[in-house]
Length: 75
Image (tube, rainbow, N blue to C red; front, side, top):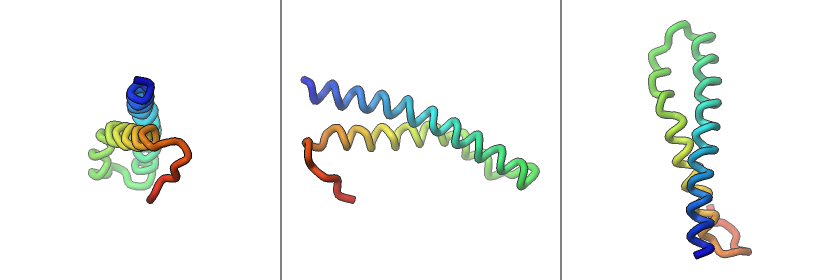
């Protein structure tokens, strides 16, 4: 029960933190892209950035929560 709660909490916090980090990262990339290139078409993919970073952060935190204590992560 405790392990399931820890995994669920890490997934939720990973999604929230990753989404916030993704919003900040995509805004910085968009501002730099607009200053360097006036109207770049490649900025369209940035709208999916926060979702992708949220899912990646949640997956990494859930993986870390599932490892037994004292176990080192393998790359």
